[in-house]
Structure formats: C-alpha cells, structure tokens
View (cartoon, rainbow over the protein chains, first blue to last red):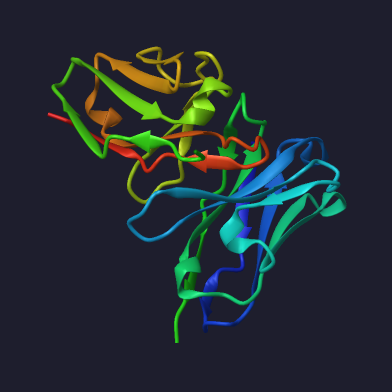
Length: 119
Length: 108
C-alpha cells in the first residue's frame, strides 16, 4: 500500500524549533519529488516547500525561507522538515505529499501532524 | 500575480451540476489540479492536467480551462461530494506552488 506517515508535531514556544518526519512506503521514494503542505486551523492549504528526488533542488514559500529546511534520506525512505524560529502563524497541520510536478499534482498525502506554536 | 481566486462557497441540489472556478494569471501558462477535502481528513486529488481523474475518482468529476480560469465540474452531485475543494498550480515564477483559498460545496 502506498503510504505517507508524518510524525514530530507538537507544542513549541515561539522562537523554538521542531523537526517533522514523513515515512514513505509502498513506492520507490527516491524517484519522486516530495512536498510539505500546511493548513492553519480553519484555513486553506498552503504549499510550504519541495525537494527534488535526489535532493539537488529545494524551493520554499517566501514566509518560511531562511527558517525552514526541507531534506530527505532516500536510504531511509524519509522526508524531513526542520523548522526553526517558529512563529504563532506557523501553527498548522503539516502534510507531506508526493509531488508529481505541476501537471500531475500531489497524488498521495499523509494524514498530517499538528504543530502548535504558543507560549 | 501568484494568487488563485476561488468563490468561498457554492451550493447544489442533489443530482444537479455545479461548477467551481479558479482564476489566476499563472493559469494562462499552467494547468490546475483540484483537491477534495472533507473535515478532519487529508486532501484527495480529484483532477489533474488537462482533465484527468486519478484512479478511483468518479467520472462525475471533470476539469476544464480557458484563459486565466480553471474549472471543476461535478455532474450529478452526490451527498458524499459535500466538501472543500482547492485548486492548485504553479505560481508565475514556475518554481513555487500556490493554492486557491478553497470553495465549500454544500449539497442540498
């Protein structure tokens, strides 16, 4: 079964750090772009970052650039999001998604992990 | 502009047809993909590319595009189609993605 499972969410104080993980199974992880997408409570979806299959290129939404780092370990079939200098506005459910490129969309999503930034 | 604009909400009678639109400059260059999200669940891809449904998506869902507007049509809406629908595409730079704010579809 093709599956993505996120972990690592939780409550963190403003200015703190958190590392999210996404474990992939059921497909050849190393062949695919991967993205993180977030959704603040009661709000819409926001693309956060993506990474090429080999990690050679990474792109970020402007609001997280310089604070968040996307990475992957193809040997472990895992995607990561290191989040530093967290702000209240980063509070959201974070989803990892298999990224087939702009034409094909995000075809597989995890169940999401909640990040709450609050004192 | 890197924004995609959607109507906040639409309603449709059971069995009737509803069209959800998404407007943005980037849609002149890139196709939109469409996602269905029900409360407490992850989004599900329902349409991508010119008009392609992933496996398992009912054929009552279809997509189209003209100029700066992409559309998702549900022909013969069912109660289970009640959900939020989001469009997504590249932004004008081509390296980033952008989502519309979402359209809440209510089936009456």
